[in-house]
Length: 178
Image 1: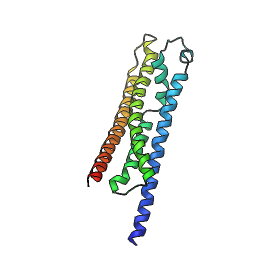
Image 2: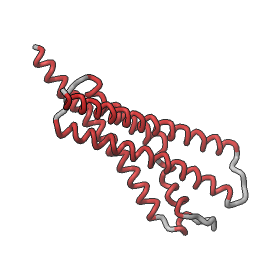
Image 3: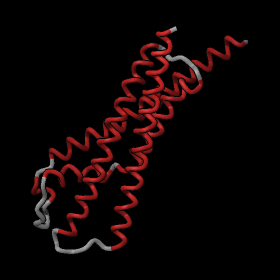
């Protein structure tokens, strides 16, 4: 009876970790596509009203579509891939390697998402400043909310991934010592 319960738990842990990997992969694909989109935008495509833009404006433009939801998906992905180790359930060697790679990917993607979000707000502010206007209060509050949500959530994903990478390193080192 206990063997059957252990087998069911092992299967569910693998499913949960796989779902986490998929979420992390989706956000990684979105961030990568945003970078590619930013490089593909020509200056004239963001200048319909004769506002001059630079490469950083064009790179920031697509990140305005990601923000807090993408960062939250990263956090959920990190929680799901960390769940097996929190529950003390082993993963297959392949899944274990994929989780390790995904955690390193989360560190990179969280930083890029945070930087892209800063560039997105820079791009949005440019629309006002290029016309010699100040952003209205509601827009400034919106920009601050966007940044708070994205940067805070991306930081949670980043630190969660770093903590799990550190815990994995410690487990590996303690396992090799015994």
